[in-house]
Length: 258
Image (cartoon, rainbow, N blue to C red; front, side, top):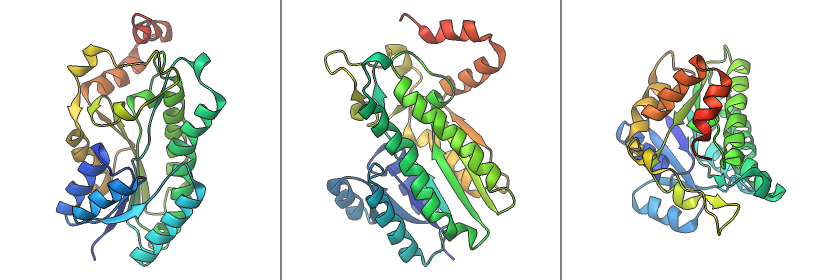
């Protein structure tokens, strides 16, 4: 039987690359995104599509019901990839910006997973994979809102993994560093007149979205998937630095010139 995978955030970047890659590997891909134009683009590429706005609980409920209907209540994998970033110093971030950041990156992901989990539990197999970030491991000045949402996603994933132990469902996190995608273009700034941009040094270590694909394949197909999959040299370096460096020295390095 062809295994069904729902991928969120398929308009571009990691989501689109994953959808194309997994379809080529023989999966039945349900490609979800928010905008009508992106839905049309995906349909023109031959994908089954799901309209999904994680910031809207009614949209999440409709999307989950559609997935269950299309798959006959048998979903093999959920790739929670959709999300965006709010950048700016914490003292300039409004409560509303914080709420919307968590609504999309955490609350919507939780609701969607909660609604689709029965379609995995009933068959005692499945994979739930999240796109986190290097900023789910450490934070830097002016990215605290986004980092807080990814820290929360990491904790949520760890708890879910433990709660699902023995069910046949595995939970993994993919943790990219800088990638070439539309993510930066879609960042919402807390101060439009003082936008936060990535340092030019990061460009030297930036990879294409396809760098995620071998990690995604392992998370989906290995009998013993890893708990975490760092992607890019920067993320691997951060993992080592967190383990070896005193907290104050790590702070100093992460502060940079700020």
